[in-house]
Image 1 (cartoon, one colour):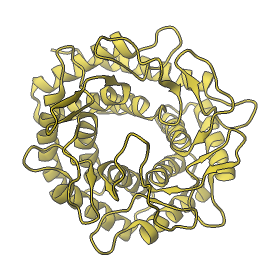
Image 2 (image 1 turned 180 degrees about the vertical axis):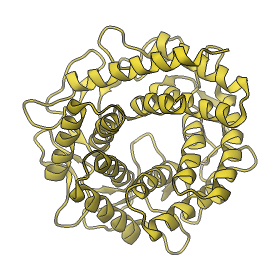
Image 3 (image 1 turned 60 degrees about the vertical axis):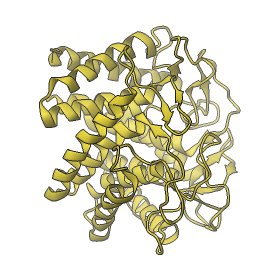
Length: 395
């Protein structure tokens, strides 16, 4: 049986180590804000673009850490992220935020990616919890209204992925080159509901609550595959699944996160429904476990192709997801999953020399050193959040 007191202490130590890394390595002293890229060898690439997702997740992470610990340095860095987003990423003419800026703050990609706007709402609402800054709250509400005005599909429901500078729907909707180009994705919807639920904690708006309920029902009816309890990833405009690919990390992240959203609006029926679904989704995600305690990345049943590398964020989210399953059921098999994941993380993902976690490892356990330590997609959000949530769950 896992010693939860020891685990809680180790997670607390790791939270401090992660935050200390970001305090020491992410601040851009030359160009302002935070660096756009630091590679796995610890080298800063000073002229790299700065991504909205990175900045929003930095704002969320330092805000959440302050709310958890009352660490003043984290609050100061949250303020730094907020100011940079407000000055350089915010589109004061058309509304919303740019997808990326150059190293010196000039707009680079001016597309409006709903995923990025959602993360900004998530971050601004967390920052408001820390500061009671009404401008931050009003900005989050403004972004909520923009998403509802431009992105919501009145015909088939759900949210479209991406728009031009002037809010015209664009052809290339992808978050990254790795993704399919489909009008609706699970990933964006997961982070829209995550953002809306965090906003609801500080803004008890009736329409906002109705949208959270709507999104929970949308996941239940359209996105969660009731034949196998994996989540569909890509969809047509009218919600026809476009891929059978399974993302084990997104499965287990959604398992706990959707339940958390139901709890934040205090809907007893939805809490019951998503407690049951959390277990079914966690069990489905368990199909991706390796003997070493880690989760595979993706699997495509139609082609029988397995992407067997292991990424840092999957391991972080899985610890939360299986601890959540244990607390719902009290079944020790889920706690064993958490223990095995934590052992894998400490053995293979910690960078004991330079700090933080490596992006991941390949099947032979060699490090994915071609991926960043800080970058467009390598941010403090997943592992910082996992540590904070685990400590709070074990109180």
